[in-house]
Structure formats: C-alpha cells, structure tokens
Image (cartoon, rainbow, N blue to C red; front, side, top):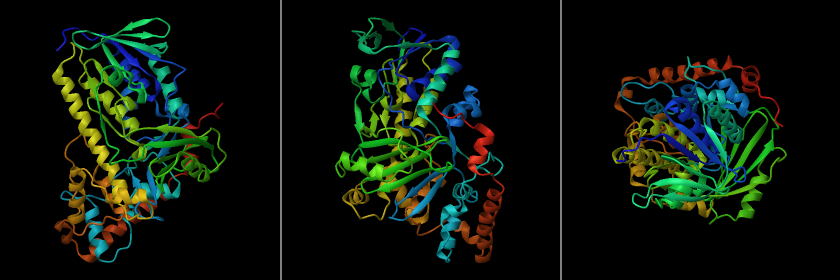
Length: 498
C-alpha cells in the first residue's frame, strides 16, 4: 500500500469513457479531489457506441441529470430491446426485450410454463409474452413502470460526450487540450508520476484513469499490463460505420441483422440513423464489407463509411499500480448487446466504491480486477452464445461459429437449458437475467426438452388460460400507448442538428 493520499486525478482521453468518469467523480467525490482531463482535438474518438442498456438511467439519476435534458442534447430515442434477424436461421426474427417475460413463480421462470405449452401444441414464441415485444412491433412507447416497461436509449455518442463535458466542467473538472507524448514512472515502484504534453507542459497526478481508447496509452503502452485475446470465440475483428438520413419515424428498438460473415446494426436517433457492419476479415474483405453495408442501408448517407479495427478480449488487469483503465483501453466486447457504455459505467461505480483515498491498497486493486474479470467473462459468454447457438450452415463463417468449442462456463449453461430449461445466475456481477438468456436461446432455436415439475400443477386448460391472459393484457396495455415519435415530440424533441 502507498501511504500518499489520493488528491490529484488525471483522466487521459475524452470521449464517452473519459467524460463519464469526469462527470461521476466530480459530482460525487469532487469536493475532495482535483480532477483534470487531458484530450486532444487532433485525436478522434470511436464514437459509434450509440445504443445502451437500461442501467444508464440509474447512472443519470445518481448524478442528478435530467432525462429530458440528456435526450434533447443527444438527439436520443427510446429503446425497449434488440431485434435479432437471421441469427438462428436465415429469415428468423426475435426481440430480446429488456423486461420480464410473462410471469415468473417462486420456483422457476416463465419460460418453463411456455416450454410445457409448446409440447402441447402452442405455436406462440416466447417473446409473444413480452410487453416489450408488443410495444416494439407496434412502434409505440410510454413511460410505464406500472406494467414494467424497461427501456434504454439510442444516442449520439459524440453529443453525449459534449453534454457530459459541460456537466463536468460545471463541477470543477479542468480540461487540458493537448497530446501526451511521454509518461514518467517511478524508478522503484513503476507507478505513473507525470505526463508530458506536446506543448511541453508536465502534468503530475496521484491516480491516472486511462480512457485513451484502443491505444491504451497508460495501461498497456506504459505499464505493459497484458491482454487476454478472445478472437477464437468472437472472431469478428473489424467494423464499418456510416450515418444516414432518416426515411421514417424512429423505431423503439435496435436492429441486429446477421450477414454472411458478421452482422449489421441500425440505430435510429431523432434526426438520423447510425449504421454499421461488424465482420470477420478472415471471411470478408474490407471492400466487400463496405459494399455490403452500403447496399443494405436505408436513406442517403451523410458521412463516409469509417473503418474500425479491433481485437476482442480484456486487459489482464484493468487496474495496474496507480492506473485504472476504462472503455476501450480496458478491453473490447463487440457491441452486439450494447454493453460498451455499461462497462464504462460499472467500472466507474466500482472505482468509486473502492476509491483509494488514503493511498493505493493492493487488496482493493485485486478486488477491483477480480470483479471486472468476472463481469467481462459473463458478458463474453452471453455474446458468444449468439454466434454459437445457430442452425446456419450457409457460409464458412457460420460453420465456424456453430461448431467451435465454447468456454466451459457457457457450455454448462447451454446444457442446463437444453435438458430442463434451467438458468442459474452465479452472482451479482452477472448483467443478464433469466429472461435475457431464455429469449436469445429460444429465439435461436434452442428449445428445452423438459421443464420444472411445478408447471404440472396446472391443468392443460389452466395453463392455456394463464398464457392467453398474459398475451392479451400486453396487447391491451400497448394499445393505449402513443406512437414512439409522438411521445418523443411531447417529451424530449431535439432541435434539428447543425
């Protein structure tokens, strides 16, 4: 443990990760800290993380950020789930909705009731009992906590960083424009002592937060922390991103469309649409990937397609000495389930819970890293499942994904579900609940062979009435919702962009 109090915090890199860290630390711990963020206008940010999961609203509530102000500033829309197309087989569609499916009981989740009814001839899909699916397909939305309509956002990531910058600076964060050209470390401990900028300015600190993106300037280039590569399980290594003009009102869900060697996203904002193609360069050339994306967008393009290269995996230690990495500097999981911003958020919350006010304590560092590792691995397995649980055999890419060996932790989960529909969450570090796992597995044609015996307490007629009642209630609830565009206009309509 170092005996020096942590007073000066230096954040390297802006973007979503840097300004989220600056906003949280300045608002919640700022009275005890001097916080400086270094970024260069010459260095771009990835800026394509435009879809989120519901927990972002809790982050905003913690900081006292108005949802309407945030949505206007970022031209945001609402998101009740992700529609996966062509994943289980070409032509398939299902929605991974954010809320509870059907009605659980004390002994088992709702999908056990559905599994038995399916054996009795019920042809309805599991997501037919999801309020989120009904709202998404109807293009409707309402703030409806009474009926459990959970939601996230589609947002402009660049504008989000700008919004958080203004928030952070109001709470005392100092922004320094400049490029870091050298990092000085302590000869004995190896800890970071100061940064040298291109201007000649030297900036010292007690705790450094690396938000420098894929460059990982501090955590890797300086401290040589190491990286655990997961490309053998998640082989996609590149993406093209492009923005298009809107041609229709924004839908309240993300579209994820599986292609020959990867998948395409469509994310509708209030005034434009974000598009991208994630793909594996071993099976698809850059030029063909670019053309595939442009052939499958709607509306006129308003940016040039931008190529991004990445390697899935995680930093072996996301906190090393007096440096904590966030965002792309800490690791990368492709945006299939919109977890990028969430991992930044959870890293920030974890840092504040273990904040080293009295100095760096190795026990706290180890705990931070252990929690981060588990969280990354749980999300990793969930994403791998999308590729592996498929009947697609129409391309070399899908043949590889379908037949590859998966982590033992995931193989165990799949077998538990395949046999009797069991889903168990190990601990609180797991992001995805039973409903998420069951929606994806059944949506991609993994149907449990059995179910929990408590379901047999219902007669055939009682089970049918139970299921029909749930579906009908959702239909009636959604019928009273306004259209998504109508709700946005009344609640948080943004000015037209420059």
